[in-house]
Length: 100
Image 1 (cartoon, rainbow, N blue to C red):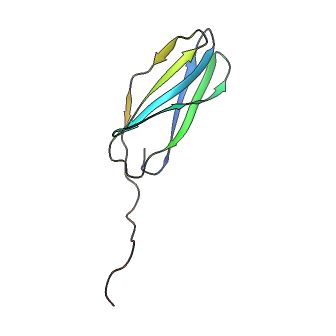
Image 2: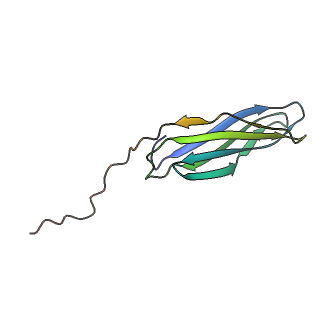
Image 3: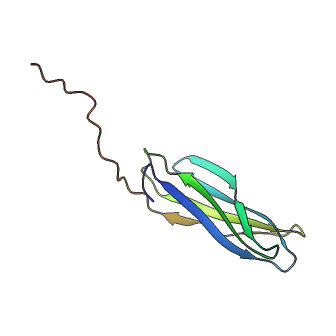
């Protein structure tokens, strides 16, 4: 993942009773957010995804886990995954203060 860029969470899920929905919990540093993911597929097999923008001042790893629920109310939460965040943004020259 790169600072200031889009990062896509995407997971393929199956369930015999049908899928109700999925969410992703992601953190960078002390900031945590839970997002409901968009669905594409059949009632029993679907891909869930959502895009986020990695904050441009991020220094630590991006950590996330998925939670999925079926139509019977059963839930499953994945193990937490850690992705390194790299700063690919160049410095900005705000103003030339050289006397002249």
